[in-house]
Every structure is written in C-alpha cells, then in structure tokens.
Amino acid sequence: MAKKGSSAGKTLLFFGIFLIVLVGAGFGLRAAGIIGGAEEGVSVETEKAKLKTITQLVSASGKIQPEVEVIIRPDVSGEIIELAVNEGDFVRKGDLLVRLKPDIFKARIDDLNAALLTQKARLEQARASLIQAEAAHLKNKELYEKDIISELDFIQTKSNYDSQKASLKASQYQIQSAEAQLRKAEEELEQTVIRAPQDGTVTGLAVEFGERVLGNSQMAGTEMMRVSLLDKMEVLVEVNENDIVNISALDTTRIEVDAYPERRFNGIVTEIANSANLQGTSIDQVTNFEVKVRILKSTYASLMKDSTMSPFRPGMTASLDILTDRKQGVLAVPIQAVTTRADTSDVPEYKRKKETDVDDDEIFEIVFVNNGGEAELRVVETGIQDDENIVILSGLQEGEEIITGPWSAVSKTLRPNSKIRAKEDQPEEE
Image 1 (cartoon, helix red, strand yellow):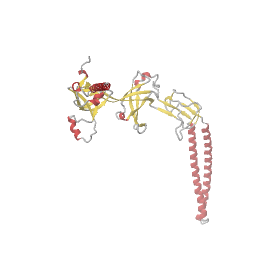
Image 2: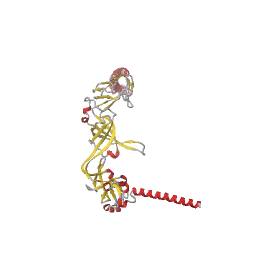
Image 3: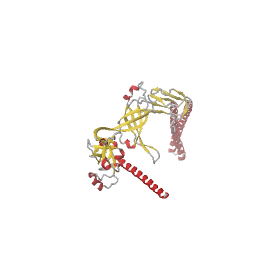
Image 4: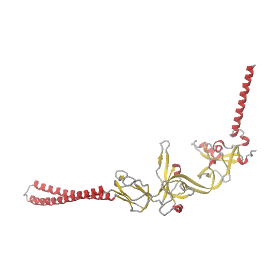
C-alpha cells in the first residue's frame, strides 16, 4: 500500500508541474501576440504622416586649429645664441625670432674668399700662358707655310695653343664655382638669423636658449616654434565615408566648443579631403575623410580681447553639425516607422515585380499603415532625414496613420493584414 500511495503522489506532482509550465507558456505567447491576438491584436503606437521641415545633419568632432600656421625650422644647423620671443608673443613679419651661432659660417666665408682669390690668380696665369702660346702658334704657322719648319713642329705649337685656351676656360669655370660656393656660404650665414615669415602669434615654442638644432638638409630640421594667425580659426574633423558624399563646400555648420559650453558658433565648410585616412587593420579598417570648417569670426568677435587674439586655442575640442540639406513642407514620418522587407508579394503592385525579378535578394523599404485595425504594408521611397524624422518621397499620403512602434513589432512581428490595436484604442487598466 505504501508503494501505491507513493506512485500516486508522484503522478500528481508531475501533473501539477506540467500545468504550471503550460499556463506560463500560454501567458508568454499571449504577451507576444502569437496567440490570443485574434480578438485584441498586436499593441502598437501610431502617428499620422505630416508635412514637416527636415534638416539633414552630419555630426563630427575634432580639434580647433589656426587656418594659417607656419612651422619654423632652421635651414642650417647650429647653437641658439639668442631666443627673442616667448610663447604667446605676437610678432610682425620680419621680426627677429632666433639667432644661431655664426662663427663656423664666417670662417667658411673667409676660406672661400681665399680660394676665390687663388682661382683668380690662376686665371691670370692661364691668360698669360695663352698669350704666349698664341704668339708661338702664329709664328710657327708662318714658318710652316714657308716650309721652314716641319709639320710636326707646327702641330705641337697648335696643340699647345688649344690646350692653353681650354685651361683659360677651365679657370673661368672654377672662378664661377668658387663664387657660387661663396654666395651659398653667405646665404647660410644669413640663415643663422631667423625672422618671422608673417604676422602672427608664437605657438608651440619647442626650443630653449643654448640648444643645438638641426637644419633642413637631408631631412626635416628641428621644429623650433610655430607662428599662427589666431584671429582665423577652423575645426579639423574626420567624417566617415558614408557621410562624406553628403557634404559640400560652403555647407553651414553649428559648432559647440567644450571650453564655452553655453555658446554656439557658426561656421562653413572650406575644405574636403580627396583622399581618405585609413585606420585600423585591413579587417576592421575605418575609412574617414578630413574636413575643415572655418569658425565665422562674427560669431565669436564679442569674446576677443583684441583684433589679433582669438578666444580659442589650438587643440581645443569641438563638436559640430554640418547642415548638408534642408527641405521645407515635405511629407515625413518618424525614422523608427521605416523598416525593410525582402518579401513584398502581398502588395499587389509589387507581386508581379517580385515574380519576374531576377534579383531575389532585393530589399524594399516599407511602412505599416493602420487600415481599419489591420496592418497594411506599404513600399516607400525615402529621402533625407534628421535625428527624428525621414522624408517619404512616394508610397504614402499626408494624414495616413502609420505604425511607429514598438520597434520589435515594426521590424519583426507585423505582417500584412496583422490585427493591430493602437494605444489610444486600448481599454484603460483598472
């Protein structure tokens, strides 16, 4: 008897567990709209398609930099014996910046002057030898014509004459070479004095008094400082390849600078790179293009202390929105209302197309319209978009009620003719 009672107890226990699982699954399927939706339908959010103004934006962030910035590098190597500026100083074109030790260049000029004088003396010697050789040649020519000397003697004097003419030319060329070397040395001596190439502010001073610097010979010389026009600033940003095709020169921008959180500045696109910056490995490679945006001075003039000093500093962080397009009075719907489908055979005007189309992988953009409590699938053509709405070019009429959510319903659950229940039609919970 004990065994029979134990067996009956186990049967009841398993039956109870089965009922609990069955009831739970039923609630889950009902909540998902898989069962029990024939009467109530899928719970959705709806909104009417309206005419709106849509501004398409491309967002990016980057660093502020001067529009004009000249890197100062020495043309010759040497020791800094005078550093005439400090970082932040404003300089005029031609002002002294740095002076390098000139001793070695002066010594070279003295050496080359002596070499030039030596070559000039050799030239005079060659000219005298030529005069002597010319006289001997003319005399022997006369004697040869009178058959007084042999042909061999005449040829020797002629060869000597030609040789002296060549020596004179060589001496002239050597003088030209020595003069060129002297001019180069004098130019190098002048290059030990480095002056400002333009008006601007000294930024990024990287050297100290007494430091040795390398000149621009076979490689880039030491970067000593930069002279920048701080009254003309720009933002350098990188834009993804998917967005760069929407950007054009002179597009307007709205700029936010971290250092001025309460201010907004205007700008225009001045330069778009033709070549991409590739980052990462070949598998995870990111393709970006550099874009330069000028900050309009009129929008920050009130922050300037004087006409030469911008309120911005090179390297400040800025984010911006580039206004790439703007449409007024166009039909638009929320972005989340638009999804994609590969199967549109339930739509009459697309049924034949789908049956005859060789491209079975074609994807259509669609929206769902509330048609008397049923979801009607519409194939649409879209245009530009902003952060919230997207333009509908065809497939939808103004005032039609479109399904905007939830996202899972729009993108996965809904099918043509699915029963739906808009939120405003749902009974309030007690």
